[in-house]
Image 1 (cartoon, rainbow, N blue to C red):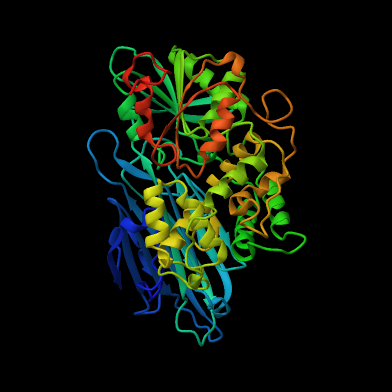
Image 2 (cartoon, helix red, strand yellow):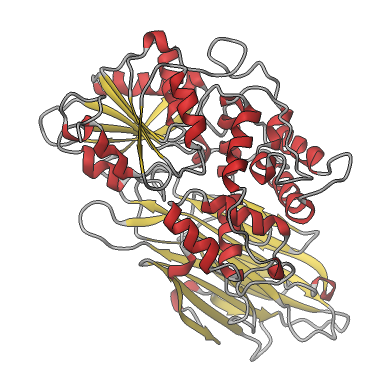
Length: 600
């Protein structure tokens, strides 16, 4: 993501995701973007044009954020009128074969620079109005009094503009909406505003965010179930059919055709298997009215007020509002047991294939429960760092908190500091969130982060934002909704005592992150009509279960107790949570007696 402020572009540049490998490769002012800027401009104040651009690269992917501004020629003395334009171009990394990265989502926003909202007097108009509307030759007409121009659109469809006249803000989000598209895409917005006569220019800040997709033309397909399209990938090992494995990478909240594309796992399976994978529903789901604002309110409250000893807990009501406005546990964001089974069934009917094997990472154990309860049977099952589906909620969050106890903490001297490239100062929540995020790493990496970077404000901000799915100022990715949509029903015993006022003695931030689950009725989405989702060991062959002894996401003691309840042995290795390397401990990667531990 790129954040830039007019005239101060080097002071407000923000990059999110893989931040340690991101670099600003170009920044310029007075940039006229040629084919991408306004066309046939008339009615502007002579010499009033201004503009700029900045490019950020992360591992070969690039996002360039542009802006331009014109003052409208108009005989008014009580105000100045400006056209402001913002667009962003994202270019995916080029690699060999059919796996070139491409932009899957581009999100751009413009708003008054912090502290400058009072400079604005009136919102006049914004462009574009809606997807595939008034888009002649990929251009929409802009008219402001005597000012006119043509605004080029990088895409005439697939975008959702969201003007906010009250706050002088404009947002436009483009999504490919399918699995195939080009390596280069862009999205645009324009708006007309009035400012006070004493102010020289309309000073706005821009946010540009690009989510990586995958150009997987031979692999990506779609199936419609109950009127909704669901995406999936079907990877063939060759011309001849091989045994079909369902590979579930876990989550919830991953984007299969984005960052969650399992390249390393596929390398170990391809050759012995054809592979089927499903994209999670949240990637294409539309947000209900008020959902985004509710998410922001929840994040703002947790960020500012956790840990709190206030009674009542100020987080509880905003968490409840998220559940209602975002329509959680209604099958919108995550999988329900029945819908997951139905989609798998539809794909198998379309392809004329049968599933032989299930390979799942982390939360995939819950998806296995969906299928097992729907009558699916597998000749072999491999579970890597499985989530303890059906476990008591309090037991799970307390186990995660115990792992954190005794581990180093980030320096409290960082509290209140604003890291370079971040809009928000660090709070106690950020310091703890960074520790929670570090639990996904191996012990070696975790120690390096917590010991060697205790005073690294930028790293703390990045890791906290990664955990919360934060982008922009206080926007939260809907991937978090998918996390709640499936995780809450997969545990039982809500409400769980969160103990947010005493992080060391209660369930800490890990518990607070699941506090939204307290708004859910105990009789769920579950496959048997009441209670929580669980596996039925009577009908499931003992799988190959491999876990990490240093796992901070599914602590090994909890996992062993859970597996013992089914009579399953657990192979213990060293490494990070859900490491792809653990597949080597099971036979499926070689196509031999799959589902059993390999001898060592």
